[in-house]
Length: 310
Image 1 (spheres, rainbow, N blue to C red):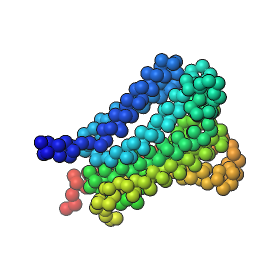
Image 2 (image 1 turned 90 degrees about the horizontal axis):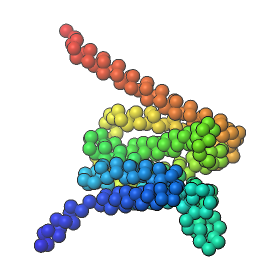
Image 3 (image 1 turned 60 degrees about the horizontal axis):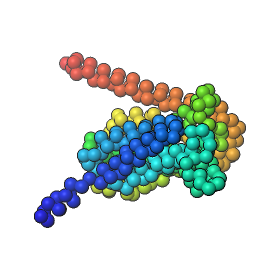
């Protein structure tokens, strides 16, 4: 009997609870928003359902050995976004929790289709920071486990830098999405210089917090075998080549906003949108050049193998 109980404890997989909570929460929000006609956030919530299913597919077996706490952090960050937006109303009127003459901004009372994003300017910054933290944690844990699985022997510093760079790059890419949505298609109400610059600052801070947490919390960082002379894997090189230009752009725009009040870009939203877009183009060029270089190396190796010197 005791052996059976001990076996049950040993086979318990901590990843399952947070990913199931993620799936169930997003399903409930999807149905709730559809019933209220808030189709915008119902669509976002359904996207969360798909992401949760992907996470379940990856983590359910327990082979990834992901501790539960990082997943709960990711769940919390996701719910801040989905629940905050879902507190709005389809007709831009008061949301579902505006009771007894409450005004938007009081407790959970919000209005507009974007809920808390509409009534609290700081909500967007909080969500950006939390999501960037969660993304950085996910990439940190992911790269560490890929390194262990493939024998790459990546040092904790390399993992931290790669996760930080990639997380900030995702934030910059999202701001480019908002730039197009705001200036060309008028499909979103985000945008503007201050909004974008503060989003980038939040992304940088969140990513930094995420990699610091992962660096000290991930048990594999303490037990992994690292070799500074080991060759860098292609996946790592391509990731860094692709994310570094966006990291540099995000850092420059953040520093310009914090120290120079946007003086370098004259607080011009169109200009910073073009700069961020240019960083994506540079990123694509660097990745393409690296792939071409690797292709040529493989061709040369194949030629040398088929034509050995006499």
